[in-house]
Image (cartoon, rainbow, N blue to C red; front, top):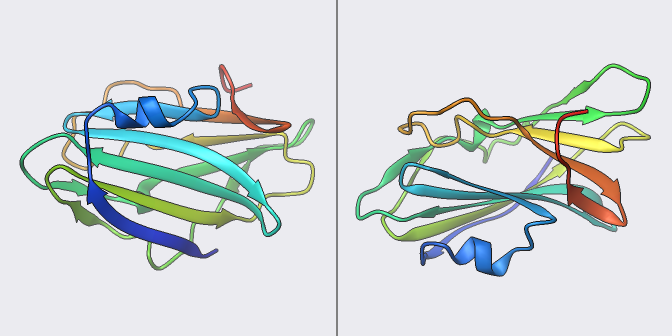
Length: 148
């Protein structure tokens, strides 16, 4: 697995909702941080993309290594997809900044659904009970409703 890109640029609250299609990205907010997740296919395979935008005037601790990715192949047990990239580490998200990361996923053959648990990515936010963001492979990946 390889993190393709990590960067921080200035952030305008709510811009993820304007920029990203809600049919292909999960959008959520944890305290000061807006989070957007999506899957993308290219010639190298499937990648997980996520963005975090800090709405506040203080730095926020984040931990992308806490992401949990599960692949679902019909009629088979769920498979945990390892995110063993050394760049997936805890880091500070500066005030009014955004971070973008992309990591290649090694999915089992026949994967039709991928679920991402992202609840602990903002370490300082009190998390409420949330369902993972699940994506179905159609013509590309789309946000699915429900885990199964």
